Length: 104
Image 1 (cartoon, rainbow, N blue to C red):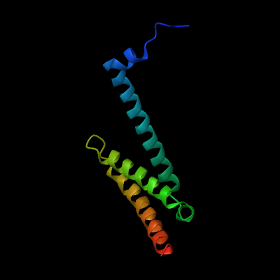
Image 2: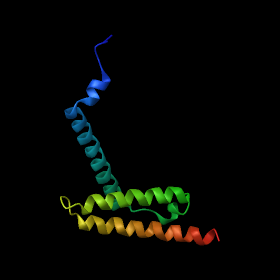
Image 3: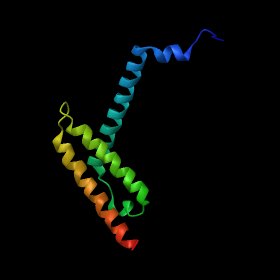
Image 4: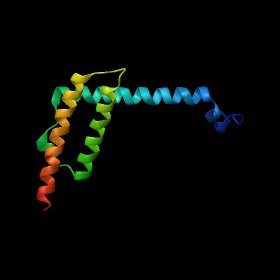
C-alpha cells in the first residue's frame, strides 16, 4: 500500500486545515438553508412537537437559534428569515411550557 502517507503531517498543514474549515462551514451553511426552506414550506407542527421528548425540543430550539445567529450575521442580514424562525421558536417554547405544566 502507501506507507509514505503521514496523517500527522497532513493535519499540520495550515492550508489543509483551512480548507477543511471552509468545507465544514459550507456544509453548515447548506444545512441551515435547507432547513429554512423546509420550515418556510411546511412549518413545524405543534401536534408533532407535543410528542417529542423535552430533550428533543430543546435540541430543536438550539438548532433554530443557530439558524437565527446565521441569518443576523452582518454579512447575511436576512431579517425576514429571522421572523420566520422566531415564529417557530415561539411554537417550541409554547409546547415546552405545556410540558412543564403537565409535569407538575
